[in-house]
Image 1: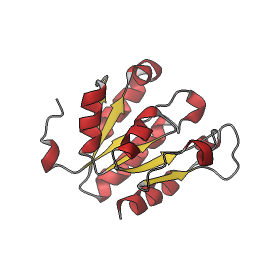
Image 2: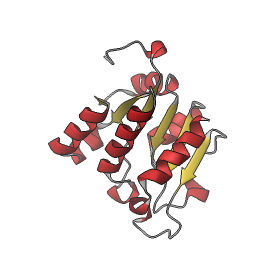
Image 3: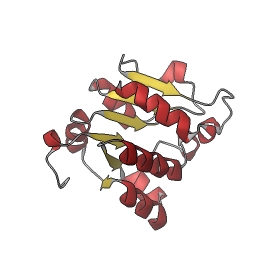
Length: 157
């Protein structure tokens, strides 16, 4: 289903969804970050989307994701676990898939806002969190692409 062997390609998983839109980093930021990563590395980007994300994102956003990586919608939990367990790193929010990646000991970067990362972050040593210092209800929206790119590079080192 991926179109390439999992064990022969280094890929990063981006999960741009969360339980509420307030917890999410803007979708175009994910696509811009994906472009930057693929331009500067040999990594591929896989977008993991569940039913909530395929409903929430319009055709334009899905097209943007498809132009910067491979979109895999509606995997079941076993397929998602297999995909995540073979990835180099996972980028997400305060969400179930982010906690799953951390539980699988995958290097995980979680963008938090407005929930408190101190209370809700995955507890794995492979996890890092970032949020705008203001902790406003839309703090994840003010996190820059540069900040996430640098944090992801640190997670991968």
